[in-house]
Image 1 (cartoon, helix red, strand yellow):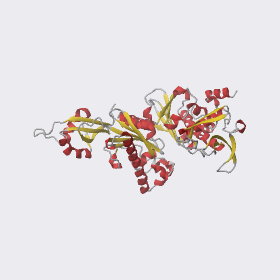
Image 2: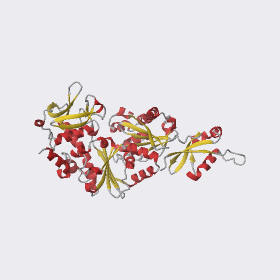
Image 3: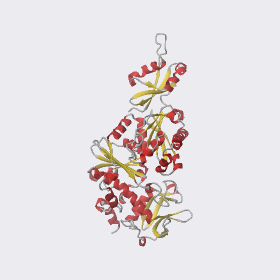
Length: 515
């Protein structure tokens, strides 16, 4: 395994009248046997004098793998080979997450995160795209704030690790296609407007200093495959063996959007679409992120709703994973039926409220109380919205499998990427029909695969080769072109599904609980 950044320490023979090779040539010759012909950055050449002589030719050089060859980007006095650090980043539309990696050991040194400053221009990505449309000053404004978040991340990592950010050699980033454009300072309008052609899906190494980052190396942005299938997904695939195995695998990342890849060693097919706000914060009046005060676990025992709250503080609302468990428990205990309709005779916690939008009365279920004693509830409208959202996620998988003439029995691994896929209770997600009812040992939770992919880019140069394979060999399918997509969507708007034969273990459990 070869990391993207390598440090080599050596004691060079000083120049003499009989050997008056230039400093650059002297170093290049020393590196030739291991690295072949190497390039030098302009900054590295400028470092050579008087550093080499003052160090009495006891120096360490840093090389980076760039477009198939190595480039010297840094020259230091003495042996600094044990100090080799770089930053892996998942640049999400809401949060920027990072890991400081020790490339000499392959270990994580520290982690840090910060809000994406683009939120100032809108919670939704589309608002940010519209803000920059044909307006270079606005694009530069967002680009500048986007880059500043990387500086903020490095400051936080320095504070947490005690490792000076001057020792950070480079950055590898996983991000969706729009974020990639903002990071690189490119107009993202083509991502949104038909025929949905981005400015670029590949990003050459960008010199960090050219972006306003005071580190010697480069910013690597993982390549995208299409307008809605970005480098976060391509990088995330590095955490799987999807392209190496004969058996078929599914890779699914659900958030506001859902991204999906199905394939094996012979082919890769991908699609993406809007999943909806339910997995973030927008499905309910009391929807919120997974932070202190959020209900994240729900259980109904003896007709009573019990909840677990993040941070052990009074409840403020409910996060996506909590909603999945709430709906699962409501269904299994017959508080709602397969259509999602609440049945008030089943519990005194099912009450009538006034819908804030229509002003009309509707049913809602109280699952917790705020600190002042006011009820926190999930309304009939909330349930209907969530069922539509879970149906979209289910339908993407079902429709792409049909497009490829595969069935669930053909799938030997089902990778769940992202925070939602990691923290949601698997049984609850299957119960409501969000995920298919397949043997549980086929499911693999990957966590933040975008961030893990960025780490792998730093630690293994083969990763960039694999990502190019993904983008070169991936077929992107527009779901609107899939013949049965609309019909599949309608069929999935029930709990767990209109065809209960697709969910045998769920129905067995349901029937057992309701004898």
